[in-house]
Length: 219
Ligand code: CO
Image (tube, protein in one colour):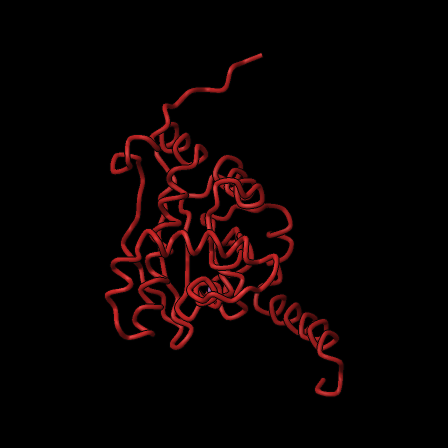
């Protein structure tokens, strides 16, 4: 397959993958095509080195995935909100995982003063996260350690952003879930670090972000 153009290689690899899957489990595709019941929503970075299902040894059907540059949860992002609403209210996932990663290009760009074009408007949100943790981050002298800490603080901030959405708060009030978690993946060794920031209610939240559970008016 080496002399095929690279995109045709992908199609050839797909055929091999199907054959292998069918060999291991002949009912795999018929089962999956009938039903999608993932237990997890993954909000991760678009970085090609952090493929959600693969790095946790999962299979198709196990994780509902949303990815964007630097795994951001922006409360006006209709794409993210639509995925979140569908995952929480229709698929009824039990866990929402925000997974960042060390060595994230988006975070690096946010710390620089360079312009990259349209994406600068997205990166602006990451700069805002830096400003929240600026005092702590600026005290870290080693550039790599500072960048690693920024990856972790950004995940913590995105877990917080998630918790403040009406989608999550209403689901907590009505269903007692989902759990939301913050993880960071290390592209250098493949291990995921659990930041132990799991949340299942809005008790620790700043009061101004707490939303009362009000059912939408019937009409
Ligand atoms: Co990244």
